[in-house]
Structures are given as C-alpha cells and as structure tokens.
Length: 156
Image (cartoon, rainbow, N blue to C red; front, side):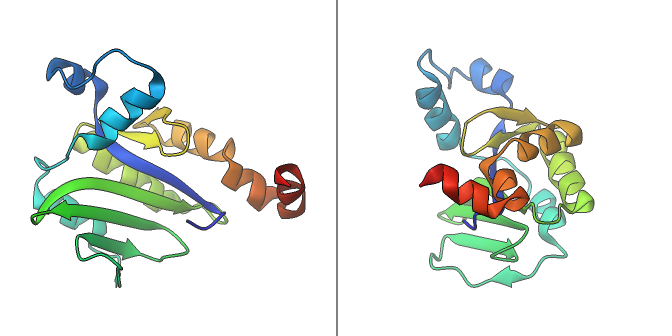
C-alpha cells in the first residue's frame, strides 16, 4: 500500500453477521478478524462487474487476486477461492479524492448490504459518502498527504 492510499474492505452488515451467528463476543481485533473471514460469495457477479467495468486490470502476484484500477491510485481488489469471490477491498488514493469513485464504492456497498470497514482501525465507516470522507481525513494517509515531512517526523 502506498502511504497516500486509504484501505477499506467490504463486510456483510453487522446485523446480518449477528443473525447468522458469525460474530461472537470478544475484543475488537477478534471481531475484525471474524468479519474479514466472512466471505462475500453470495454477491452476484454482475454487481462486481458493474463496480469494476471501467477499470483496467493490473497484473497480480497471485492468481486468486484480481486488481482493478491503478496500483498507486484508486483500485479494487477481488480475492477468489476456487473461483468464488471471498473478499473485496479497495484502496482509495487520497492525493486527489475522486468523488465518483467514492460514490461507486458506497453505492456498491449499500446495494449489496455491505459495510465499508477501515482496514487499519477496524472502524465501521458504513455506507455514507460524507462519513467515508471524514474517516479518510482522519487517517495517517491524510496526515501524510497534508504534510509529508511532519508525518515522517512523527513516526521516526
């Protein structure tokens, strides 16, 4: 991941997870790991195709990973196991946030009853563009883009 990218993954809505007894009580890290393990295999291929239809396919180091978009920019990663979608994640280039890309991600999540989850914190972003942008602006990636020198001074 480039320092200027903000990572999210898609997870079935928490209510759906609870209803299917897929969430157990535990610390947030355990819950986050359980959410990552929930597959999105019931997503229709047409829905995924619509999400990535205008994006170019990048070469991947893994035959089970399809990378759509720009490696250093906006992209969507589709992981498959035995040709079935097991996970979908996105990297958002915050050097210049593309409102259309953000709206596509949120619309995809909302249509498929998924939540956007901040990959670095596990915080639920939901399916709201303004909350997504708010989460992005609080991220380390935003601090880097805002002032790279200050960002590196704070981590050294």
